[in-house]
Amino acid sequence: MNPTALQLLLAALVVLPLLGAVGALLPAPPGLRGRGPDQAVLRHGVTVTGAVLAVAIALAAGFDHGHPGRMQATTDISWIPALGIRIHLGVDGISLPLVVLTALLTFLCALYSYFRMPTGPSPKAFVALLLLLEAGTLATFAVLDLVLFFLAFETVLIPMYFLIARWGGAQRQAAAWKFILYTVLGSVVMLLGLLLIGVKSGTFDMVALATDNGPKAQLSHTVQLIAVLAVGIGLAVKTPLWPLHSWLPDAHTAAPTVGSVLLAGVLLKMGTYGFVRIALPITPDGMHTFAPYLGAFAAVGIVYGSLACLALVRNGAKGDLKRLIAYSSVGHMGFVLLGIATMTPTGVNGALFANIAHGLITGLLFFLVGALKDRCGSTDLDRLAGRTGAALYGRAPRFGGLLAFSAVASLGIPGLAGFWGEMLAMFGAFRPAAGLSRPAFLTFMVLAGLGTLLTAAYLLLVVRRVCMGGTPAAAPAGPAPGSAPVPAPAPAVADIAGYEYAAWTPLAVLTVLAGLWPAALLGLTDPAVQQLLGGGK
Image 1 (cartoon, rainbow, N blue to C red):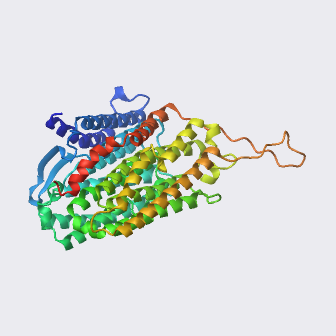
Image 2: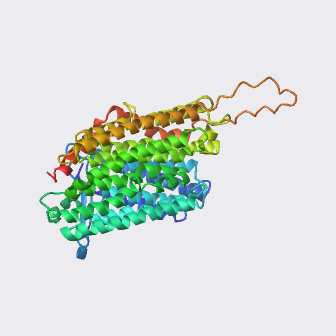
Image 3: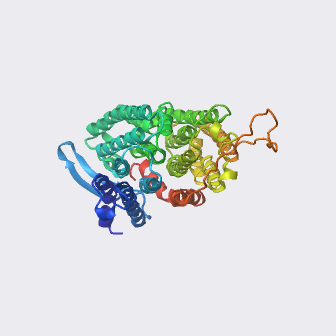
C-alpha cells in the first residue's frame, strides 16, 4: 500500500476514537435517535469502534509483511521544538498485533454494551469514556516518542477509573481509588526514568534511542540502571508484576463486564509492551542487570497466582469467579515477563505471543463470567456449584461448552493460543541471554512449569463446579409427614443469545487459529524482535 495511505490510516486510528468521544456527548440528530437518545449513543459507540476496527484491518492488510522489522506508516512532526518532543507515530511487527487486538476488543465491548448496557449513569458518558480509553490505548502502541508514550499511557487511567467507579459493582469506589493510586504512583516514578533518558541522551525519539550507534551510546551504565529501575517500576505496576499486583483483583471484581475485558485484554499489555519497546532496546545494560530479578518476581507471580486461584476455588471458600480470573492473569502475565527477562529472541517472541493469547482468552472469559452473573445473579463459586447453581452442561449446554473451551485454552493446551507463548517463554528461560545465570533461569523455568500444572488444576475445578454443578440426591415422590419441604427446582439459565454469539465468536475463532497457525503472529514479531535486540541492525 502507498506509504501516505498507511500514514493516514494510522493517524485515523488515533483520531477517530477521540472525535467519536466528543460526538457521543453531543445531542443525536433527530433522524438517528431510534427508540431514544440512549439507543442512539450506544449505536454511535458501535459505529465508531466498528470504523476503527475497519481501519485497523486495512492497516494490517496494507502493512509490508515482508519487512515487519521496519517501522511503517510513520508520521514525524515537530510538536514542542524547545524540548525536542515530536508527534512521531509508526507501527512494526511488535505493535501491529496489539493495535488490531485493541480495536477488536473495543468493538466487541461496544457491541455487547448495545444489548447489555451496564447499570449506571447516562450511556453518553459511558460511550465517551469507552472511546477515550480506546484512543489512549491505540496511541500507546503507535507513538514513538517517550513523552507522548507517557501521555498516552496516562490517558487510559481516567476513563478506566470512571468505568469502575460509576458502572461497577460492589466496592467499586474503593477498587477504583486503589486502581488509580497504584497506577499513578507507578507512573510518576516511570516519568522520572523517561525524563532521565531524554535529558542524558538529548532526544526522546524511541527509534533513534533503540540503535546502538545513536543517542543511546551516551547513556552510561549508571544512568541505564537508574532509568530501567524507574521505568520498570511504572511498567510493572500496570502489567502487573507480583508483588505490585494487589490493585488488580479488586479492580476486576468491581468493574463492569466490558471494563474487565478491556482491563485484562488491553491495558495490562501496555506495561509489557513498554518493557519490550523501551527497557530492552534503550537500556540494555541496565535491563541485563535487573533481568534475573525480573525473572524471579515473574516466576513467583506464576506460582502465587495459581495458588491464590486454588484457594478461591476450593469448597466453602466463597471465592468469586471474577476475582479468580484476575489472579489467573497475574500468573499468565508472569509468563510474559519471564520471556522478556530472558532477553532472547525466543523468550521475547513468546512474551509477545502470550500477550495476544491472554487478551483473546481472558477477554472471552470475562465476557462469559459477566454473562453468568447476569443469569445467576452472582459469581460466588459456592453458589454457582450448589444444588441450585449453574450446572451449565445440563441447563445451558452451549454456554457451558464455551466456558469449558475458554478454561482449556487458558491452561495452555496444545493447539490453542495459550500454549505457544508459555512454551516459548520457558524455552527462553532454558537458555537465557549470554551473561545471565543459567541455573537461576532454569529454576524459574521449573517454577513456571509447576505453575502450568497448578493452572490446569484450578481451571478444571472451575469447569467441574460451574458446568457440572451440584449432584443432589433423588427427591422422594412426595414429602413425608413432618419432613422438610422438597427444595424448588433451580431456575432456568438462558443459553447463548444472538448478540452474545456476535461478541464472543471472534475471540473463540482467533484462539483456535492462533493455536493452529502460530507462524502468522510469530512471522510478524520475530524480525522486529531480532532487530530490536540487535540494536537496530
